[in-house]
Structure formats: structure tokens, C-alpha cells
Amino acid sequence: MSERKPVERLLVANRGEIAVRVFRTCRRLEIETVAVAAPDDAGAFHTRQADQVVEIGSYLEPAHIVAAAERANAAAVHPGYGFLAESADLAEAVTAAGLVWVGPPPDVLRASGDKLAAKRLAEAAGVPVVETGSPDEVGFPLMIKAAAGGGGRGMRLVRSPEELDEALAAARREAKGGFGDDTVFFERYVERPRHVEVQLLGDAHGAVIHLGERECSIQRRHQKVFEESPSPALEAVRRAELTGAAVALARELGYQGAGTAEFMLDGERFYFLELNARIQVEHPVTELVTGIDLVEQQLRMAVGEPLALESRDPEGHAVEARLYAEHPLTFLPQAGRVNALALPAGIRVDAGVEAGDDVPVSYDPMIAKLVAAGETRDEALDALATALSETRVAGVTTNLPFLRWLVRHPELRAGRTTTAFLTEHAPLSRYPHVPAVWQGGWRLNADVVRPRPPPVLETAAHPTDPGGHADRIVAPMPGVVIRVLAEEGARVEPRQPLVVLEAMKMETPLASPFEATVKKINVAEGDRVAGGAVLIELED
Image: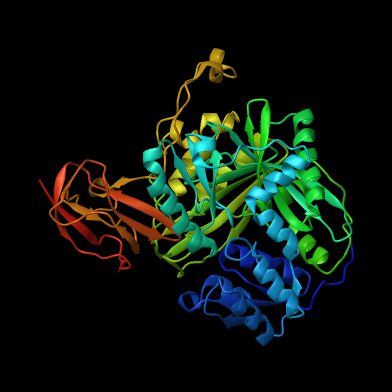
């Protein structure tokens, strides 16, 4: 590997922990760094970690990013993940300005970013895919997915035709807000699969390699909260089949840069889901089991250096937990100020805030990623459990109690988790007692479990409503009112959604706790509200 630095100055078109993580590699390579900040993000943690800061109007406008890079005299742009990370328009704008784009070229981004086109390429490469089509073709249950991005935004599980119109409208709003594109598609829903993905690298000279797989089955709101490498579900033969399929797909696409092929494991079968043409949130677990800095590889491939690596499987084991400012039972985002923060020593920590920082309403509420490694899976899990016990956060509600509960859960310890884990095991519930004689085969005759849709909150009973008033719909967190679904004087049913609140690019419907009459509506669509604000008043 060449020791020279790939570029002199790099702008990261992102924020939070991913921007800080890219800056860390740049410091090691002696590359100067430029941060960008939207007006409502000035002074954020990532801006204090860069050599230079440029204010931009929006993280979602390619012209703003390119203008910032030119103003800072940056030689290259790294998009991070989320926002415009998979935007062919940004890639074209960057290269048209004579700058280095640290990611796949625009044509590859368009081919992989079109999830349906990517599935057709997968079929051409002989990789099995989940059926897509119109709702009539796919049938119910089905999943609505955003065509332009992932991370859980723009996804809705629909179990009946009656749910379709509302779910479709919500998915499109989230996709537009998260990625600037409201295109969605329909996919057959697979009950209780595992979610496994393969890390890929491809250079401009046609070489494509894999760096093993990651297990990402434990999710809430279709977003991952715990990842590990290697997957406890794969033995050597199946691992070779899966990684071979991922490499075949990447070659069919002519893939360049770092990317991830995502799959569902359904018993003995696996299906291709999508190809994420960017670095993933969970990339640190791969770095710990391979010893490879994926950001450095991105930078070197971006300037045309050939890969000096071969495919390799994970060695040892690594696990990652995402520490969020969110309620540990409902997983609703919680904005606020981090008054105190003590993160553990002895493991890798990728932080996005520090004590004194605010977790804003408009962006992802991640505080830090805690990543532990060991020679065995048990060693890695034990190290993570210890690290979580040492972690302290004050001033904002977090999912720390949930993570401490999760990492000690016997089903996770046994490696038996699926995407339905949090449906089968409510957060912070008592651990199940499974007699040893049944362990290993008990799933064979299990009933199919219906995974829960995004929560429809009966907010009067929500823990963040300090008054416990049963006649009020209270905002569980700060946000923006996206829809008002009720009228004053109307009679409503128990669990009927009355208002939809958006926070951190995710939508949450708030429902009536009982049969009632809408006495007063205190908000209108587009209003920004504080946590605890009374949105709707009810009466018997």
C-alpha cells in the first residue's frame, strides 16, 4: 500500500459521527479536512473536528456542496452515508467541477441506486431476489421501500389493501425528506428472516473483492441497532455462496468504491435485497475483523490506485451497538442537550457528540457507536457488555438501558436472532427461560410472528407525558406536525391515528387512547412543536 496521501484536502459532505470518523483517517494520512454545516447545525461536534468549516444552506443540495468545496479549495469530496451519499447528481457535480469524488461513478450510482434495476442485475448474475411488482402482483403482506436510499426511511410494512394508501403516502414523504426523491417500490414481505450483508470493494481497474459479511438482523423501525461480524448463522459453505453472489453482482454492475450487498436469509435460502453504494454505518465491525481501514481504501480507489488486497473472511469476532438519543421502550427520538457523557475506554468508540452538545430535531439522533472485538463471539459480547455498563449519559433520554438488556439477552447470546427479534422480545422484558433440551430446534414448529409496524402511539399513556393526562394527545418529542387526521367535534375510535409527527426524518403517528370526541386541535400541519406540547384535547 502506498504511503503517500491520496489528496491534499478533503471535504466531507455530511455531519455527525461519520464525518468525524472520516476526519480521523485523514489526520492519520495527513490530509487537511473541511466540514460543512447547515444553518441549524452551526457549531456541531463534527465542525470542531475539522481544519476548516464552511456554512451551507442544506446538506441535500449538490450545488451547495460543490460551492463549499471550491470555496475551501478542497481537492475531493467524501459523501459519508445518508443525505446525498448515493446521489449521482452530486457525483456528477463534483467531477464536473474538477474535484475527486470519493465514491462510485455516477453511472454506477444510478444503476445501484435504482433498486429495481439492481435486482434485475442480480438476476442476470444468477443471484436470487425477492419478488417485486405492483401490490396486486406482489400480494399482501408487502413492504414499501424508498428507491433512492435506505436506513429505514421510506419503508412501510403493509398487511392489507386497506392500509396501503396511508402507508404509501407516509413512505413517500419520508423518502422525499430523507433523500430528496419520493420514488418507492413494492416488495413481497418475508416473515422472520435474518439480515446479512457483504462488504465489497471495487477499483477502477476491474478488481472486486469482499471482506466478509455482517449480521444486522436486530432492527427497530427497519433500522439496525446491533451488528456483528461474522454472522453466527453462516457456516463456511454458505458464507462462500453468499460472498460469491455479492462479488458476482458487483462485477456484473462494474462496481467501483466501497459498497455493501444486502441479503435476507430465509432458512436455507438467501435473497438479494439491494446494493448500498456507500460506506455503511456498521463498517467498523468489518474493520476490526480484517484490520483494513475502509475509508482509506475509499480515498485510494477514488484517485485511481489499484486494490492491493484480496478477498478475506473475518478473523475473530466484532460487535457494534448504536447508542441513540431515543426512548429505550418506544425507540422514539429524543432531542435535547447532552449535559454529561462518559464513553468507555478499551474498545472502539465512534462518537458524534460530546458533553454540552445538543441532539437536534432535524437530524439522526445517534450519540456514538460502541464496537468491541475478541477472538471469540462470547469475548466480543462480554467486552461490549462491560463497555455499556461503563457508559454514562445525562441530560437526554437514550437507549442505553435497552442496549445493556440486549447484549445480555440469551437469544442474542445464542445467535438465534431474526428481524422479528423485537417483536418476539419486547424491549427490557424479562429474559425467556428456554429448557436446554429444546434449544437449537424450537423454531421448527414456531408460529409465524407478525412483526409490528411503526408504533402508533397512544400518547396519553406515553412515559414522556409527565402529567399522565388521559384526555390529551401530547408530543412525545420535539418535531414537526406533518398531518392532522382529525376534526374538532369528530368521534374517534381507540388507537385511531389523529396526528402524524415528524422528528429526525422519521414519521410517528399519534393515536387516541380510547373512544372519544375531539374537543380541540391546537396545531396545524407544518407547525413545529416542543416535546410535551398538547396537540389535541379529547373528551368522553
